[in-house]
Length: 618
Ligand SMILES: [Zn+2]
Image 1: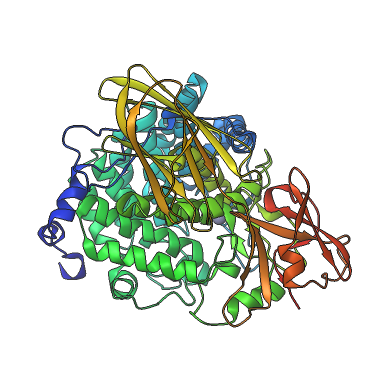
Image 2: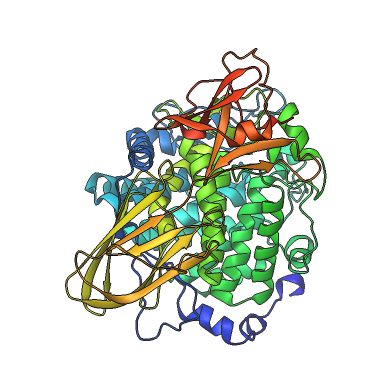
């Protein structure tokens, strides 16, 4: 079988960790920890309906994306599929990337018809997750209806006419799986099988790198036919296998792992990031993580860990990465140079979606609290500040870290990022808490309530507070009966001097920065845990070669310098002046500089002002 012939036995013969990985994969809507849960097994995810979020900012993003998707007509959503399959296609054209244009030429008009129907599966996935959150029957009805209508359009033409056949299949696969799992769509599995039967003959049969030609058709020789992302498919194929779609999904997942030029060198800790398309290759690290979680492959776990560490090493202070959608050579000046030469600093909804998945998977395996720090940084400084999705398809795409930056919509309508933002908005729930055997891990500090059961008792854990603007997070517990369990709280690596208290009593020595603090006790209703994180200011340079170009952070928040006018020069500031930033209102800080006072704001509150994420200090 050549390079596809990695035997299943070899995957499984990797010892006890592999067996532990197979014991519970946590992809189910409800946690299934029980008597069989090994203490070293990966943490599991809670269900979407287990967490209730009370943060206005997070919920606004969920409501916005949910209502935009609910407002799109079925005919418009099906239009490109019907057109590609030669069927009557009534209804309005959504336009933008979503449209189908048989005469598409990226050199003449990049936007219209670039990725026909590609976000459909992500929207079905997001709606299914939204149903799991809200229980709104109209949402479930729409998911089932869209799947039925889509099923009528399934044909090889969908894949022949698409520049992104693997991308489209990958997203359709997850949409159908989520419809099956969260909406109990009785048809979803059958439609999934038909989709796979139809798609496979039109896909390359193995992972094909970005920019590599694989299609024989002479009409498909321009560069735009080489940008598909088949190397991201194993993640969802493994999930399909785990959710009962059948053994062939496991085999297909192995077949599409991008080993030779990507995971093998990453597993050996060789940095092969330079020049690769940022979002899709970071996204593919989740395929490697899933090869461990589902197939027990230690090599792929190493590849995912090493690859993620290499991405972190070239990240902005916000947690974003990949200026101009490219990963960079280690030690190069590229990321520093991007501050002056591009506004396309970080592909935010897609990139954060990929980032949340890989950090969540790796945290489940390693229980390394610093992966939670990374999720928090990404959440607060990038995607939580995304502009809302508009009903006409205007979408937030790039975060801008240029010295002359603006927070703007993308020029294209219905781009890839309009597919991932609704998924990100739903997933704050599953990112915030994780579950271990007789234990809960609090990964993110977001005002919310978790409901779960432990040994027959029903428990809730509620967190409140104005963190990250204020240092305190307060937790209250309810339990239907006194229950012995362990609650783990992430202590951020920057939080030197953090305090933890239980029912008003300090717990000295328990809060270690960069680790989870474990509180094991018999919990009773009314018990209270108080966390306090000293929110000191600090500076982070863009890279080691440019220590004078810094971002100002306070706890997990990057404070960005607002420019009075677009044409205003950057302020002249010293390190000491930046570090002395003082709070002037709930969410605004001020720095005194030689050129006058400078307002510093976190990204979600930047609004339409000109700003700079980085400043040069003297
Ligand atoms: Zn995108």
